[in-house]
Image (cartoon, rainbow, N blue to C red; front, side, top):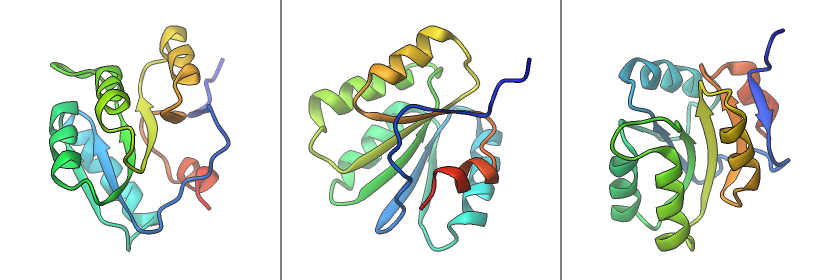
Length: 138
């Protein structure tokens, strides 16, 4: 059985206008690949890649005026994607953030959690692919 590379949660389209794309993954190679894929579709959009939820929170806190489109890994050391979302919900909920889970996890618990989260717009499986970006972009 082949699992789809995307498991949409909500039907909100990807909005890149006036946004910065923030890639959050502890794997540098994945960040490099995802940066290249995103640039093919959105060459005009600024992209920042960080290797932890903490780095992402620090970056967002230092630049709260920006609007972010975030591709977030779930399973990372020190601060998981779920921990990141909890902090966003508690402390930075007023910011304009679009969060898309980008993970290798096919765990039903993670998928259920994403569906139940108001902050998560979609659940995507790694690696990020051009056709998946096109399917959720305006």
